[in-house]
Every structure is written in structure tokens, then in C-alpha cells.
Image 1 (spheres, rainbow, N blue to C red):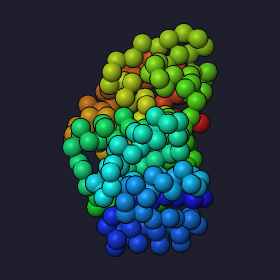
Image 2: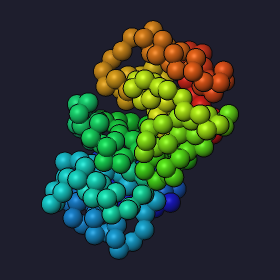
Image 3: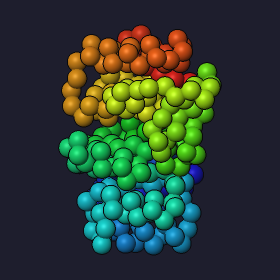
Image 4: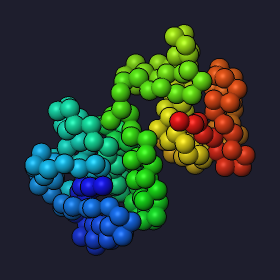
Length: 219
């Protein structure tokens, strides 16, 4: 599997490359967005790992946004020191599958990469995602249907569902919910209530409760 890494911190880039190569990935590194952009159109990659603040005409956000506008659907993960919820939201709006904040453990990065490769994020999938129990989720319209009938969801319920869909087959913890749905710390009891409200609208076992860990949905 070929990975394009855009990272201008040389020591970090080398660490990521060596770690992923030891795990069986083929990694090509770039420190400049212009060079990375050119390489994307000259070759073929299975995943992009993109820093945001890098030398070049475009930052990581702008580069991915342009790639998506041009029809490029290769999965992408942002790796950045930016921590504001606005930055997190922009990263997903640009078409990223995931967003990992610096500093991070390389083992965590590997897990994120494996998960993205496994599920292929929204931007690289069809507009309609088939889910267990005859549910379907329309990515563009942000609409859930069951056997053709639309399920009415609140805004927070939709965000919770999307996170569970993006991480199908793995457990979503409370920490992941408050990071990616709320963008700030939220009491776990509040998360349980919100997830509980969503589960009441769905088939009993569609969202599984992994006691003491979090929630998940199957493929």
C-alpha cells in the first residue's frame, strides 16, 4: 500500500516513514505542498497523510479541497498541531477521513491508518452507504433511511451516527465522541443520553453497547 506523507518536520516525517515502512507500507515523503500535489498527479497513492501548515502555495487544507474538487477520492488523514474545533471542522469539510493532533503516538497513527483503509471514508465511498438491518445513509443529504423510509434525526444524532459509520467495525469511545462530535469535553452521562436517544429510533442491535468501552455498528 502506497502512502503519500506531507510533513515539513524532518524528524517527525522520518519517524512516521520508518514506522509505517516497518509495518509494510510504502511511504513517499514531501515537505512542500507543491511537490506533493505534482506527485499525486504523476503517480498513484492509496492514502494521503497531510500536515496543514507546510511550505508551498497551498496549505494542507487547501490542497485536499482542490483535490476533492477535481474528483480525487483517495482517503486522507490530517496530522497537525491545530487544535481548535474550527480547524477540526474544516479538515472534515475538506474531505478528510480522520484528523490526528500532534503530538501523537505512532502506534495510534497506525491504528488510524488501518481503520481508514478498512472502511474507506465518506469521500471515497458511494453517496449511499449500505448499513446493517436494511439501513442506508445518504452522505450528501445526510439522511438515514430504513427500507425506504426516512428516519428523522436531530443534528447531534446525525453527527453521532456519522462517526459510528466512519468507524464501522470498531468501538467509538466517549473521548472520540466529545472530540469529534462536540469538539470539547462532555460528561459521559450526556453522551450516553444522546446515544440512547438515537438508539431508540433504530433497530435494537443496530448500535451495539460495548460495556465500559463505547459503542459500535457492524459492517
